[in-house]
Amino acid sequence: MVTGTPGTGKTSLCRYIVSRNKGWIHLDLGRFAAEANAITGYDDSLETSIVDTNILKKALRKHVSNSVGEGVRLLIDGHYAAEVSPAEHVNYCLVLRCRPDVLWRRLRSVKGYGEEKARRNVESEITDYCYLMAKLHLKRRRIIQLDTTGSSVGKTYARFMKCYRYGFKCRGDTVDWAGFLLKNPGKISFLFR
Image: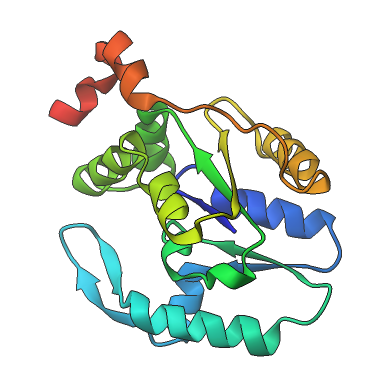
């Protein structure tokens, strides 16, 4: 499973992995939610679909149980992946992270998010939301964080593959954005505009 706040590089990494490794499949939860009829509405203020996680969780469990064959390596990609993925089918969880000020620029310029949507996602990153959800829902599964702040998709891929080869017994990155922002208060000014 690959999770993390939007803009941290999940989808880019999953596409990169699949393009270089035979037998790997990328499952984008956003698309899967639409196919599973798990989208129940639209939030205009956040410019995003509303997903019924219970419907999505059931559909994903069924898909993984019935459609994923032996030897297939399925990459489940989404910021709410830890909340909906059947834990018994998750071997490893990679949480991608990005420094809040860099994430803000990525979301505003690359993804074209509005201020409120970008702000909410950056707040989620600062509070470790995706990492904490992985810890809560996946219990004893191996969970590794990788900081993508100054890293290309190729470098992140190389780090991922190294972790994968060693059964995720590698050391991930220690992330403390609250501590970073306390030491660098100017880096957070965009949140108070």
